[in-house]
Image (cartoon, rainbow, N blue to C red):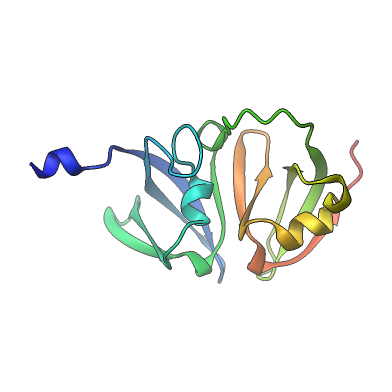
Length: 158
């Protein structure tokens, strides 16, 4: 009977950058259906969700671990996992940026968002966006913890 009540989940590999430095390879478990949008649950849904701790399987230790989301500087996942299917028909605002974290690490990628024209500056997005914002790399999406960013530099596109 309890099998009928289980929510189907899929195991997704994630590289987690911890706030004090260092990274861990873990696997998180995402639902087949998201509660706030159509399609499957994304890593961004999990990171921007509720609760302080996220259950994960530590790949190296081969043990369940509980990661405090406040201590996650960034989480890198395949673009396929984080692909949006919201059917957005508006042209997004995009900026190539370099993100400096408080621990000295830097990330580089594309920030893409849709906001009303009167609030569409990069600073508006950084101030009002989700706690973890997506940074698009060539093959991955890095979800960056806004609270652990020391600065963002808007770069000129080549």
